[in-house]
Amino acid sequence: MASLPTGALDGIRVLDFTWALAGPFATMQLADLGAEVVKVEYPGLTARQRGFGPYRDGVSTFFFSPNRGKKGICIDMRDPRGKDLVLRLADHVDVVAENFRPGTMARLGLDYPALRERNPRIVYASLSGFGQDGPYAQKPGVDAVAQAMGGTMSLNGETNGPPMRVGVSIGDMTGGLYLAIGILAALQARERIGEGQHLDVSLMESQIALCENAIVRYSAFGENLTRTGNAHPLVAPFSPLPTADGYLVVANVKEWEMFCALIDRDDLAFDERFLTNDVRVKNQEALIAELSKATVQRTTEEWIGILEPANVASLGRVNTIEDLFHDPHVAARQALVDVPMPDGLEGSLKLPNSPLRLSGTPTQVGTPMPGYGEHTDEILGGWLRVTDADRERLRSEGVIG
Image 1 (cartoon, rainbow, N blue to C red):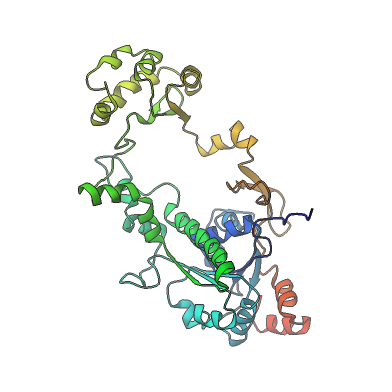
Image 2 (cartoon, one colour; image 1 turned 180 degrees about the vertical axis):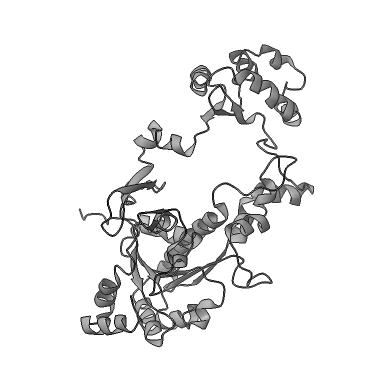
């Protein structure tokens, strides 16, 4: 029996022009799945290219995380010789990914029509704040703006408080995930139709997609949902409750009376405000206040030990980020993995593993981000047969790095 490839995307080459977080997060998914992802940067290192702080040993941790497992080359695409190198490299790849403002790649002569003319099988993936056309196309799009204009920020926060940004960069990262999904779909379609296509994903529309329940409720009933804090519009309780040492999420209570008995609040089982799920939803503020009086009396682990064996509700401790580093399930599943520091630096950083568990072609996470221009010679020499002398001349003239 022939051996399986090392990853599901083994043999797929990606030319990666993305920067900041959203685009690199997308191409990182492809690298985790086994694709050869070659990140293109400009010669002449700047902080803007290599990310924000905080820094460890001079390395941007912001840049490190979503650029693991990639190769790195430096080419000045504004120089005609650099542009020619990029065009030739595009002849050898399956995917080009970019997240510049619409029109940037066209001005460089490196947009989809230019590359498709040379390589009709190419999948050209563009990620932007608002898409390649429409009234907002030229607006700069960043995470907070995407959350705001895509609707998710209006749904996040306390009931009487202001709109609140989600604590992780969900505007960027959701857009990146949709870009990765679209790339995979386009690669599969290419096997049927024999050619690639252009993929246009926007951060704003990716956030709109997350608002599916709120949107269908407005469409069906004219309800303009807004912030409800930790309350759920359909189920109660469905929120974190304070304990003696943290918080415990209690959701989907199946046996209300038994649940009340187990928390030593039998009286709540007969309180008219809480008799059914429907009335509990209407009286959530009072419900949480009463439940909190009980749950704060014991630690989170004590409550899990009492409630979980009875199978009366779905439960979960509210982990801090530090807690994840000590959680036995996280360790057993290897949900966090050590990735070596680049450029021969000592030590490693622990990063999230890919959540995709493929039995036959497992994901591989464990190689660091590329050093600046680390693979320029390998890629130009190997793919394009650019000689040592020519590379040295181009490097001395600032075309490559």
